[in-house]
Image (cartoon, rainbow, N blue to C red; front, side, top):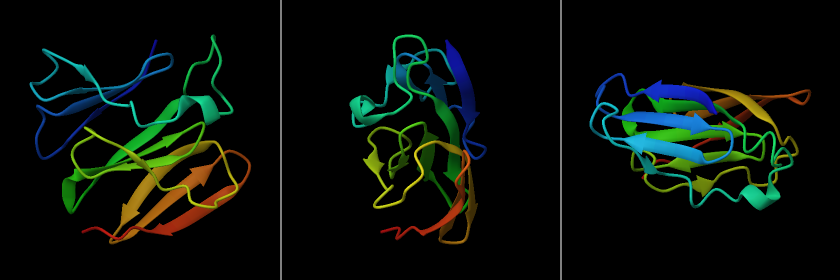
Length: 127
């Protein structure tokens, strides 16, 4: 099941597709071919992971200042990629919320909404 599709506005050949059971898939050729792009996302610690729901990929946003930088809000944390979604790292740190429903960039701040836990502002240090 496909949850969401995201397109890099500066390069429409780059697409990220979030699926409920298989994770994130990435295309660099406008959707002709896809490769899995979520092996670093730990699905075992995702409170929403099960055989029916899968791993909810609620929101992904390309950084407007550098579209190679992508953030992903899931049912188990917030993840960051510096290379168009090829690899991911967790940036949840010690945040309490688990279900991150949306993301927004403002300069070097990342804002994320969470289900029932409010809004979180993170400083993202971009190399």
